[in-house]
Amino acid sequence: MTTMSMLGEVRPEHDCPDDLVLLHYLRSFRHPVLEVWAACTEPRQIVRWFGAVSGTGTDLIIEPAEGPVPGPLTVHVDHCSAPNELLARVDDGALELHLTQVGVVTNLELVRRHVPPDDAANLGPRWQYLLDRFTAYLDVQPTPHWLDYADLAVEYR
Image 1 (cartoon, rainbow, N blue to C red):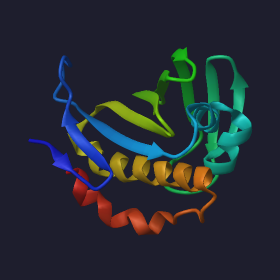
Image 2 (cartoon, helix red, strand yellow; image 1 turned 180 degrees about the vertical axis):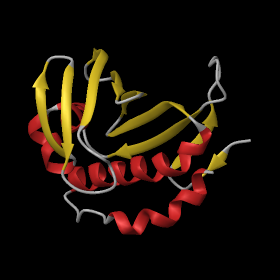
Image 3 (cartoon, rainbow, N blue to C red; image 1 turned 90 degrees about the horizontal axis):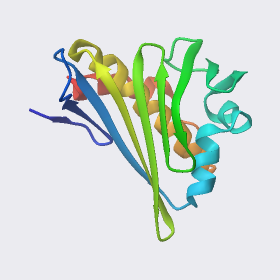
Image 4 (cartoon, rainbow, N blue to C red; image 1 turned 90 degrees about the vertical axis):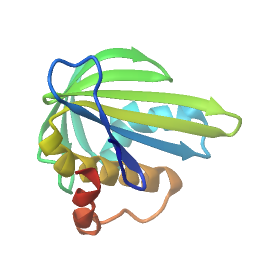
């Protein structure tokens, strides 16, 4: 069974030895793919919507500015094919980011893999919040408030 929220989805993780799930998000932006990619990957932009970035190359540390994400986060980039694909390990989880541009719209697909089912209710709203912060940054809109996401945990169970 797949549990659906307005912006995120919990799906069974296939080809996985444990009974894990993945979190799947899809967002569309009326911005060029290079602009969306830069906002996702350039430290000087990440600091504006997520937090300070330190480190170089494939090993980074992100110190979240605010919100529900306990920091600092350790990020190891496994694969990067700009401006379309980024595969990374964020702390203990696998993260995939896929960007495609169709006409004037860039689609961003974010997949957080290897999530224990009991953790989906905690992680799902966090990623949804971060994606909303990212969207607000790109669209020059007010930043959302984490407290508005507390009730979303039930959507990810």
